[in-house]
Amino acid sequence: MGSDSRLPNFRALSPAQRLDHIAQAAGLSAEERALLEQPGALRLELADGMIENVIGRFELPLAVAGNFQVNGRDVLVPMVVEEPSVVAAASYMAKLAREGGGFETSSSLPLMRAQVQVLGIGDPQGARQALLRRRDEILATANARDKVLIGLGGGCRDIEVQVFPDTPRGPMLVLHLIVDVRDAMGANTVNTMAEAVAPLVEQVTSGRVRLRILSNLADLRLARARVVLTPETLATPERRGEDIIEGVLDAYVFAAVDPYRAATHNKGIMNGIDPVVVATGNDWRAVEAGAHAYAARSGRYTSLTCWEKDAAGRLVGSIEMPMPLGLVGGATKTHPLARLALKIMGVQSAQELAEITVAVGLAQNLGALRALATEGIQRGHMALHARNIALVAGATRTQVDAVAARMVAEGDVRVDRAAALLKELGDAA
Image (cartoon, rainbow, N blue to C red; front, side):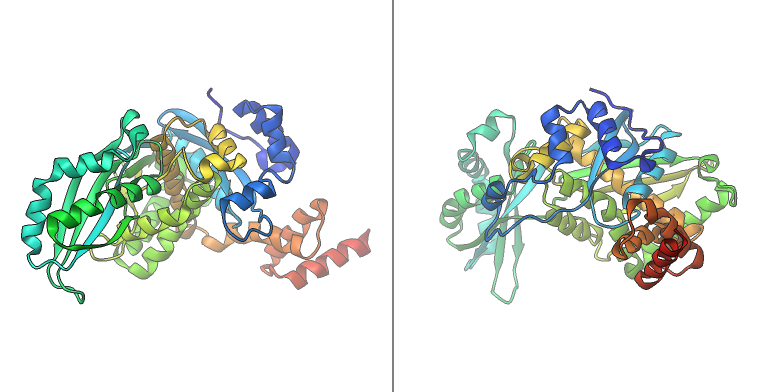
């Protein structure tokens, strides 16, 4: 089904009213709605089966980012995150992007690598040639371990062999299995295949197999997003759109040339990506590891995004990065709210999920760069952070906005100041 991702005045609604809207837009059943409005969606016995030594459950806010349009389709984006301003920034940048048609996305096939490390080889180049000659046999051995994946159109597609002739542990050879994992993240699949081919690899190379493990640098499994914004779209009452574009470009180039800035720049991108990965029950650590390794693939750590100005003077942003996400297996299938998040998004494949996720990262990056190029990052962030501080000080829902607004206006966002303002409100009443 299609959902209108525009959520007008959503912030002003109560959580119950927001849930009403999302439940209707996403076609949630009464049972699915109950998972969101009542605590305990993840039953303790289910949590106990997911990881070890369970003593309870830890909750984070689950929100929905609005306004996203990806390849012409409106998408409601569930996000799980504790940091203020993330959801608001993503939603607002998506609103600006809609004026130019939203985000265009694409992705490569869901190919993952398994690595098989071989040591104790006297002639590593000869061993490499021997493995390549036995390619078909290696593929058949790997594919024999997952008939279900083969039936779905996936499987081990190819091999690569790298030689490291001089390491502290002697010559090392590494076999890569290139596996199409379809709609899975793929870790268990490729690890199983690596284990399966290890005896054959030892036989062919006369070496000793050590590690048999996936690589989280999923550089064959890329997702891309692109957005175009006109100066008119970016303009504010205080600033010309052309000036904002120049400021965004200056901020981007800083990240492109300086790794100290790039680390913070890319963290901002992951501010958008990680909450979607967490909401859908995927492995955010794997995504983070691959993202930062990919950012350093040239030998120098740099920006994951690129921002340019086209011939018409429009701002053009793009992102390409590894995005190993799945719809099947692990917490994606186990956690009730992860399944619900996927339903709200309306995604049909892991590749579609990956594309939407990188679009959110690009939107988040635009929000940060736009803020840095205009009023500075703190103004909007502190306005939302002030609400948290007011809550810590004991403000009720009816008091939060007034206390937060006073602290922001004063430029003094502290718990003790919030407490003093609450006392003033109490005295005034």
